[in-house]
Image (cartoon, rainbow, N blue to C red; front, side, top):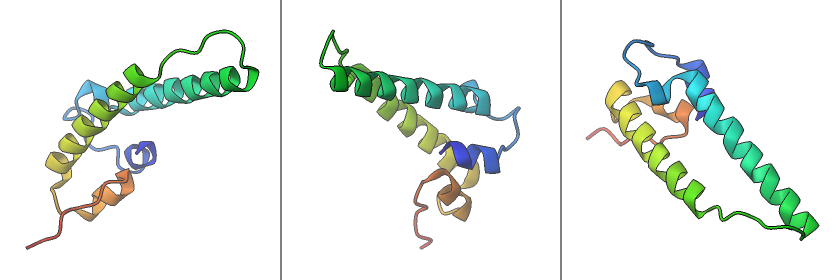
Length: 92
């Protein structure tokens, strides 16, 4: 999805703050660091590992919100949605 935001930056004034490229890139960085921390904890089998359920719930909600906004911004059948990893609806 980040590659789609890089390829199609859109109008920055019309984008909600949560979908602007710096915010999306920050979320991706935090997700990658959380995934790396999990991998280290699993490999070491020492210490405690935090549950990823709260992060999963936030990620799912964020992706739903982003998808809903992008479908409204580009249109539900727009081919531009594929750049974000979203399957456009078929035109009737």
